[in-house]
Amino acid sequence: MKIVTWNINGVRARIDNLLHWLKESDPDIVCLQEIKSVDEQFPRLEAEALGYNVETHGQKGFNGVAILSKLRFDEVNRGLPGDDSDEQSRFIEGVFSTDRGALRVVSLYLPNGNPVGSDKFPYKLSWMARLEKWASERLALEEALVLAGDYNVIPEAVDARFPEQWLGDALFQPETRQAFRRLRNLGFTEAVRAVTDRPDVYTFWDYQAGAWQKNNGIRIDHLLLSPEAANRFGSASVEKHVRAWEKPSDHVPVAIHLDLAAA
Image (cartoon, rainbow, N blue to C red):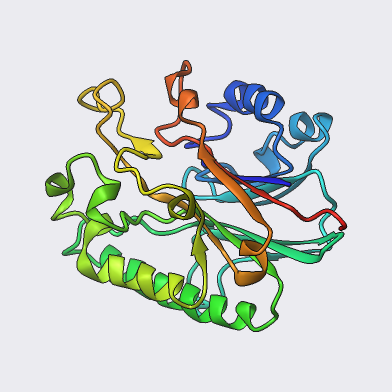
């Protein structure tokens, strides 16, 4: 089973890219972030025409997450628990039945947190603390769980072409990286780093200053696997070529394969 995360940076603006990519990449489950669309304006019919079931948690003009799946949804949960006052659409969970039992997949869009001196940075850290608590509870179910999305976290210096350029950024603050490590250390496997320790693996290139042409990238899109998912983990890859398409997102898809077929 192929599961992919992709911050599409506006689904209406990139509908042609999305549909072309769905046909080319042929994922089973897609986690989209930053759809920047209310639920009613998501291109549901176009995705359904390609064989996908669609569930969204949208927000007008900002944020927004979605899951597209060839499997039927058994359950859908919207919004990260822990703060009833949080109205930002950044979290959606889908539950599916497979030959190997239940599969839980989350599409998450973690807060950016910039500027560090504003209230946006504490919001980022509190959101990560809520995610850690939620993930700990889900891990207790001992099911295959995939936390996929744009984490807005540069985990290590090797995950940036020029880490010194990010020292003042919320994505690379010690508190941010520590929170990511705490989450990972609950027992998750970070898919891309499980298959490569190369220093030039990036998932985001800014639109400015020729970042794509210069390969001045960072790795901030991650898939974390529970032990039960990691036991079925086959491969991970970054579909970098999508960044070179016309009207691209500044992120690219990151894919994993899990063996969830019957023995």
